[in-house]
Length: 206
Ligand SMILES: [Zn+2]
Image (cartoon, rainbow, N blue to C red):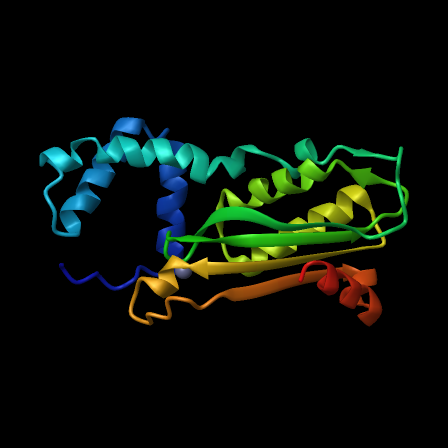
């Protein structure tokens, strides 16, 4: 594999990105770029097994990066009827996301808890909210923060806590080879900063 050139200075990269945005990127251009990547890594994009690969990759992006077309407001319809003051928890929501540093998958589960203040959400909405932010380029720390903040904004509850446990392919598959390392991140807002509230949530998601 050829050596990578030195990284361009940040201002040049910025200009290049802005230029690309001006021209509409056609699918044919993207397919050509992927073929070039396949050559760059040392394979032959013209061989039979790889002929359809660029198209498959582009098609897979509709799902993997579909979150950019979704807004949290569209998903988070709240209602007052049946509202309670007890903690609401949805645990072990499975998710699949892409690490923005290596474009490799990371996946696992997310548990969300909130303390309602007069408004609640349909429980399936929490799972859809996870999709909105997971189906983008992400880092795990930002993923939990974005979920917590959009709930605080829309639902205006006493507090929110989000815990994410994930395996990162960029850790398992490259040099470090810690195959079973699980990364845990959390975002804590409002009442969940109190020890007793946090403990109740952690007990529920055990
Ligand atoms: Zn990574």
